[in-house]
Image 1 (cartoon, rainbow, N blue to C red):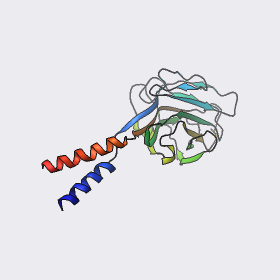
Image 2: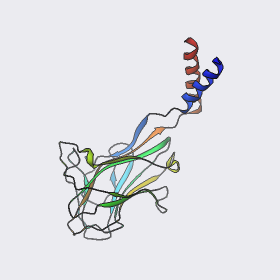
Image 3: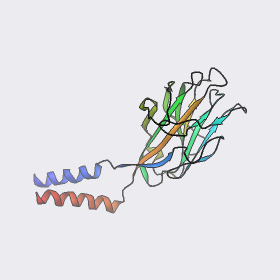
Image 4: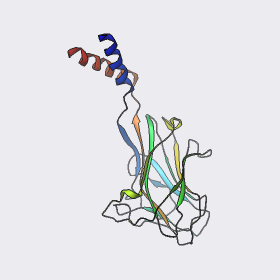
Length: 210
């Protein structure tokens, strides 16, 4: 019976979830996004950009969600998007989180999409709604935070991954805006095989002392 308990304890240690880390984060506080980009991440390595079919789109940096900067644009049509590119090498259990709001005439329905090659895209979140929430540079509003969304295993340990926030509807006016802030790609460090063995042995030793 004791051997069974020790074996189960070791298995539990091996299967236990790793602590999530921030792989990449865009706060837009350093790379002030007054153009389509690409804009460098403030934490980790990555690029953010915007795409609009209308050449008259204006990109700007109004206040974020409890911060001084965000990534904003107007003249939205269905299919326009914000895109975020990074690497997940050495990480698994990938997650994607962001803050998003809009003006009263900005688009309010989006998809979260993902890709590993920038060509073939799959939907992670379908037709989510973005509310009209007023942001302040001082006060964070949790009503504007989406996620963290769990990404598929296909994004684990990849040299390049992409996420898009793609508008499913047009804005109701050319001046209508949509903006994002605090975009975070997270994950858990993939343990080395030797680390897993040591972790299991450590757990067994602890149980034996008891």
